[in-house]
Amino acid sequence: MENGELHIISTGKQSPETLAEIIEEIHPYIDAIHIREKTKTAKEIYEMVMLLIEKQVPISKIIINDRLDVAYISKVHGIHLAYHSLPLDMVKENFTGFRVGCSVHTIGEALHAQTQGADYVTFGHVFATNSKAGLAPRGLDQLRSITNSVSIPVIAIGGINPINVRSVMESGAKGIAVMSGILEADNPLGVAKEYALNLSI
Amino acid sequence: MENGELHIISTGKQSPETLAEIIEEIHPYIDAIHIREKTKTAKEIYEMVMLLIEKQVPISKIIINDRLDVAYISKVHGIHLAYHSLPLDMVKENFTGFRVGCSVHTIGEALHAQTQGADYVTFGHVFATNSKAGLAPRGLDQLRSITNSVSIPVIAIGGINPINVRSVMESGAKGIAVMSGILEADNPLGVAKEYALNLSI
Image 1 (tube, each protein chain N blue to C red):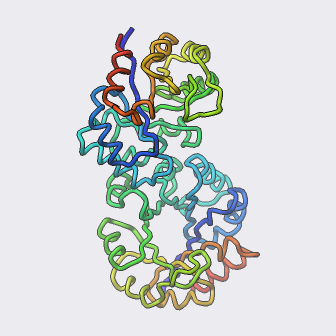
Image 2 (cartoon, one colour; image 1 turned 135 degrees about the horizontal axis):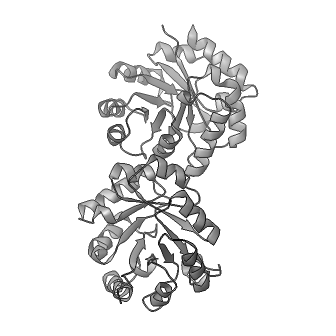
């Protein structure tokens, strides 16, 4: 099995400086860094990306959530669309050259995303997680159904830790995405290494 | 004196359907329609623009506030930037072909916008207005200072009605922008015509 991709997603709760400091330290172990800052303005997200670039974080690893305009202007390589974002097919048609991902929650949504040209999908939440407290996790069986249904990579998200990550990969995921599990850990570098190690064996 | 431009700016409070119905009726009297919907998602703003296009509102009159990506994908001709938007010079450099406006509140900001390549600025609020309740209006003298300082068109905003519009134009403005004064009027068409008439004499 090839190495699984390790994505991190910003929590929306950390200051740009704190986030940049953590990412500066851990990025060699991370494949994709999602800037997902729903309450921040275009200018703030742009400045956050500039801060990462200043800290030598590879632009090829940065993915901006929803704000395609910020992604275009800051010349990052990836964008990630949510249900409230611009339509995926319009994005692929008008902005070429981006790796475009999309959040999905059902097989139907995954197939639709694939048809519209998504380069990958994220699916979750797989396990119970504090960020989706009270919502039943979708579980490994549904993950397996999704990975069996589409040919594009499926990145699993939600409650994935260095212990259960193997079961996720064995369900056909091409990688995982982690938020607080790494970014709010006492030792983000140590935890990132632990995830990366378990994604490579 | 040439005819002054009449801009309207969406209030952020009307449903897309209500707004589209009003604009469908009044657009022949309007030069620019700003879609300024701070709490709406990219998808919602995109759908709002599609609704206007469906109702034969000329795409050349539509200006989208802040969401450059929605403007690009929906192929409208104008974008308007606020202080929290992407930097004007980066926008002009990366997205050519748009008429790009910018909100300013001081001579310094107006000069900066002009240097960065703004095609016009909006300045206000000129008169007291409910949408800026408790904030002192900037007045006609400041408007005059701004219009004397820059060579790009200055569109005045804030408390402008069909009566005081002449004094605004005599202060060097190239046009005015109105929100609730037209969009929340009992008879938007009648009021729009009244403004348009007083901008043409």
